[in-house]
Image (cartoon, rainbow, N blue to C red; front, side, top):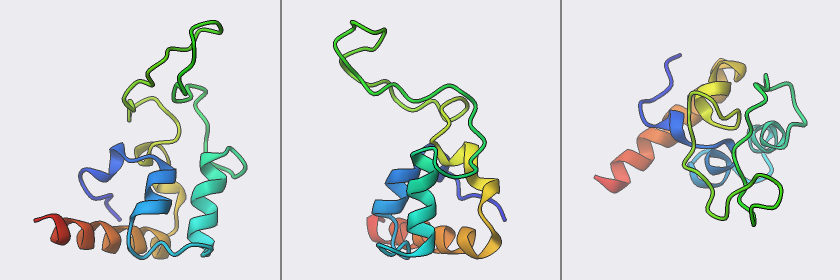
Length: 102
């Protein structure tokens, strides 16, 4: 299933918390958070999203915008690790969101 255009830049935690259909405590919600935390089988590409900081350990104060081609917690990197049912929930949630904002 194709990922909706625009969803690729969302982080896993944003999808878990913001898309209709991803219910708190559901298996998909838990999977998204586990993948976001590195506790699941999401293929990590070892380029984690900067979390911000004071610069003392190579961080910056203001986090960078997600780079969907490189940061491993963006939907673009993990979409294919969801089964068809999970993808459908997210596709439907994305469609609902688009209807609400248009």
